[in-house]
Length: 143
Image 1 (spheres, rainbow, N blue to C red):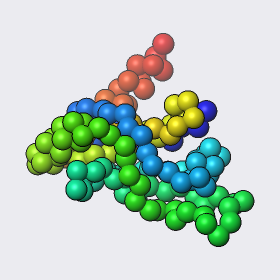
Image 2 (cartoon, rainbow, N blue to C red):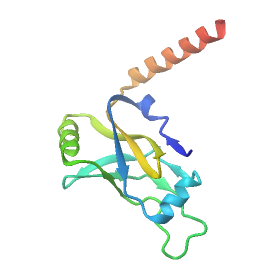
Image 3 (tube, one colour):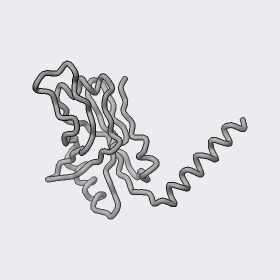
Image 4 (tube, one colour):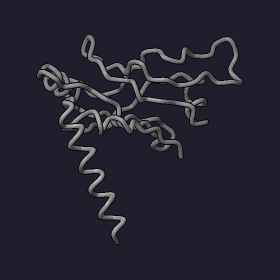
């Protein structure tokens, strides 16, 4: 089972809410994703014309593909209901709220994206996260 994680998201953002959505992919993207050659580290979600798009996500070109191969960093449409898009757009209108993909995975034979409604951390928040992580590491070593 192929899963792609955005490990930096929990360090850089406070995750307020999560929503699972589908993603519109072409055939060679599915095959390339199945091989595990994808990344969502620098990607983010954007709402345009009551549609949600995933920008700057990377899915490598399929090696066995022909001239109809896909672009690696194209904008990909996320599949959500109108009510869900309306709720997300209301949250995004607040200052400092971003849509960050946390995870991309297969559910059955379809690719799903776990989209996080996130608020950016300040530098002192990141330092606090590092302290908490170090403390938990030390307590695990003692046992």
